[in-house]
Length: 111
Length: 115
Image (cartoon, rainbow over all chains, first blue to last red; front, side, top):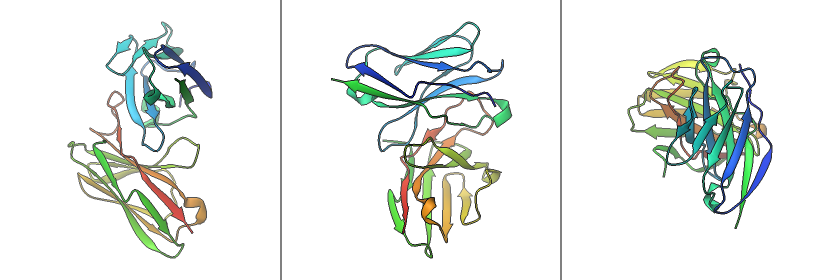
């Protein structure tokens, strides 16, 4: 199964944009890129997903590199509530589409 | 508020006890999942149910026994657990298994402590 690499932690200031990187150099053509986040004392929460094109929703934007070997989750204006662990996950047929969580990036937001 | 409800939120049990964790969703999803999450670690998949049938068991010890009595309910029966089984147990659901572009919806978990 294709793996992802994320920084262990990142810091951001409140009301500023945040760019969370993810490397997935062994991604296959049919793998979807998913992002989930887990706030303290809560279960993971779906954020966004994409295949080839950039995606936007009310929570975030997902920028996917042209070669698909990396992607970036963009939070346009961080709030204190965005402090969480962010997981970048590749969903592939090899894992029957199941979520295989890596270590994720712990995002801290400073007021 | 999540659309997947797990009860109880906390559970303390001895190693000889029998208890059950419950999970409920009313989104019409036909795939349901159990995950285990140790402190400061990512969630790990335990079981997958598809249309009320067990489709994946990730080599979980038999002291964990899942059950899916109907499309809305998922149980995890616990018996003779060990202290290392203390963890957060997460339930999730999705429209169906094998769909790579459908999200999973998670509950907030049951925090289990084994004495």
